[in-house]
Amino acid sequence: MSALDLVHLAAACLAACSAILALVRIGRGPSLLDRAIANDVLTASGIALLAVMIVGWNRADLGVVIFLLALIGFLAPVVIARFTRREHVSERRILTAEEAAEQMRAREDDARRAEEAEAQAAEAEAAREIAETAAMEELSHVRRTAPAAIPPMADPGRAPGDGTSPGGGTPHE
Image (tube, rainbow, N blue to C red; front, side, top):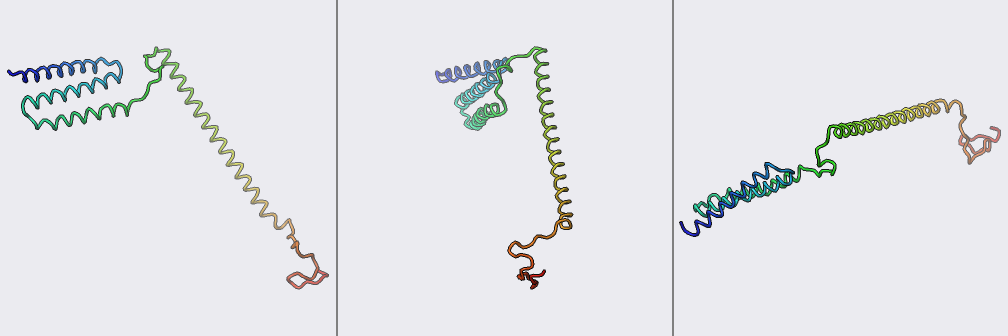
């Protein structure tokens, strides 16, 4: 066994140890961020092990597997970051039964208030539409009865009976 083989063995052992520790961290947590970082470490350890195998065994065809592991190592934190949300300080601990019940009551009250506000807005809109319809009906009733009740207006530029009406009227009209 040459010195170079010992270096390869030491690198493989270190990568394997880091992979085992990363698996422990993934299992224990405690937070999602700890698990995501441990996942990155596990991916990097896998890449290191494959690199040692490529060099030690003269297997250049395993380079594709390294590329795929690197791609997964890049995409995993992006996906985790995309689908996680920030926790409010009050949400970082486990609630007691009373606190959970209080939160549920508060959410139900908020939902009830939102429904009531929506119902009031719908009632106001319906009342506005009814008033608008009644006003339109009143206006159409006035328009139907107006021609019979109100005499036609005279042309303000001509006085009645001045002889200038279009029908050739006389001043005695």
